[in-house]
Length: 244
Ligand code: IPE
Ligand code: IPE
Ligand code: MG
Image 1 (cartoon, rainbow, N blue to C red):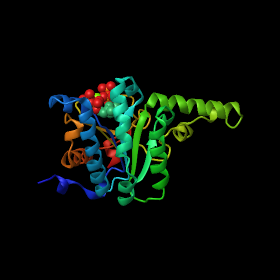
Image 2: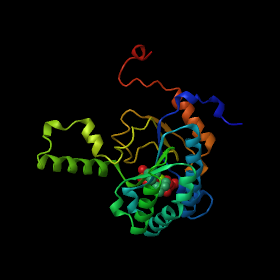
Image 3: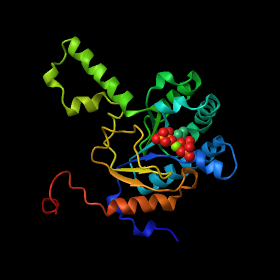
């Protein structure tokens, strides 16, 4: 018995972002190495990608590695990089008609990871199904700093004036420029924080936190988040009367 029947298929969030947290604690609870949790988490990525695409989500943005995660022990960082290479399967992306994109500071990633990303992005660019976005070596503060540099360059080159800076051209300089802002943000693993994720883009996103560790997060848990989202009233500063 799942909660699928309770979902209103006409009001599926267009963009769902997920902070996939709790892999390490999931493994430690089982007396295993943290990296076993990351491996189990990769399987959850496949399952939830399939679930989201099935429901008709257009963009799924998964936080896989933050710029702060570079400060983890060397062997964990290396294991994660290897896991990204092993998990990036063009065949699966193609079979499911998924478009694949990466946001984040790609320059910091090892060459073989960058090559895998470039190949998957290029090969899937004409697919018409859901866009699967991985945030890799990503943080909002990095992204916004980068956007400000790009705008400053345009000013220096005389292409725009400081008074031309607006919300739209700031958004256009972000890595996420190709997609709408998230409608729903899910964080697994029990922490109640955003950890430098999509801060600009989530200014009006509905937030959903759950205690389940990412490797245990099921399709049914995803349905629960969608159902919860569908009970929210998105007012964007207006009154309830104006919305109705
Ligand atoms: C999230 O799980 C995955 C990454 C940050 C790469 P964690 O590794 O943060 O797991 P916990 O929070 O320590 O349990
Ligand atoms: C956030 O998880 C980053 C990812 C899920 C990739 P962390 O586990 O790194 O977050 P903090 O440091 O506990 O906030
Ligand atoms: Mg964590």
